[in-house]
Image 1 (cartoon, rainbow, N blue to C red):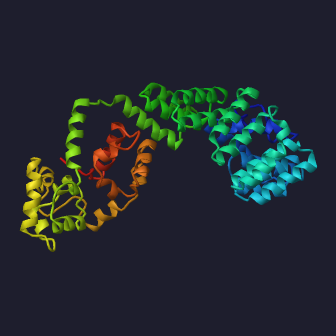
Image 2 (image 1 turned 180 degrees about the vertical axis):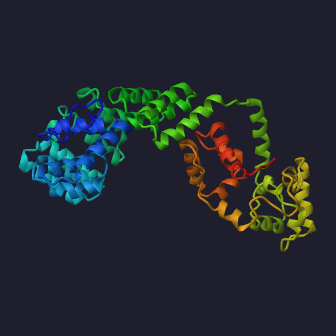
Image 3 (image 1 turned 60 degrees about the vertical axis):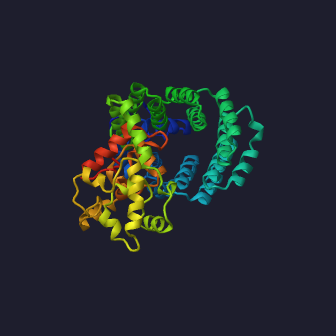
Length: 436
């Protein structure tokens, strides 16, 4: 069997690797897609074997591959030992079977597990189970390791984050680095907390330290790419994404991000044109409620879901007059408002070449089915999808009823993502709501 790159440790040798070696092997296995494929083949080649030691090794291997349910079944059949109960606890925790995981961790002490390690793993398990009081109790039992154990301070920081004590968590992560400067998980959480607090430069520094100590740290690389893209440093963002794809060529999030960054690098931004468009959109998005209208006119427009001046450009005189209780007097009121802005009813429909009475989004059952599809079907980049989530736009139909200005008003949403969405909609024969 071909050896996994960057690792001389064999899970299926004459003797089971030590706990430290198993941790190093797990890191090597998950450092690249190729390593995972090779390791998965090796595990599969031993799955049918029935010797107790091989069953144990297969169970550990399945856990390393993220196949926790299969891992539990194998590990339960393995011989009782420190490795069995440790990895069984980890697999049970992944399955959210927290009470059983705690029991398994307790069993590790029968086979010489270090009490500090057991308590810290119990604290992590309780925290993941959202039993923060129990997690705190486990950590209190380790308090004599303050300023001695990096892992103690890391777990304390994780608990404090879960409790909302962010400043205290940051201080503990810094203590971790004083004791273990290359602790990549503490570096990642320090970066993440600084990122959320708006300290971008510090976040970038910590993310760079994290990927220096763990080169294939996918989450750190992608978060760093987002920060670089926000700063307009597209080449640096591209390098981060490319590092991920070198190790994980089929990583879905990285591939979507690559599209976003590549389009950002080639995008031409006409600032003057965008300013003009912004001013025009501000006029068209003026709420109807800002104008003096009769109660009847206001009520009718509200029931017709017409909220802004721009909405009036997408409806004709005939459609307004066809609405119950809407008459010539109300029509004159509305036309007078539009006249003051140089606008008129139905002009957006004329610009789109639509016949009177036909509005975008109204068509066959097939069209309705398309509009009801989730926005996830558009296969958008991470940044674009985040914006749609913030705007609570869940269906393609809801998206087509949104204007460019509304999308661009979302924080961190730029012209690149806007063009991505417009291109995706154009491919379906659709478009964003136009106020032109």
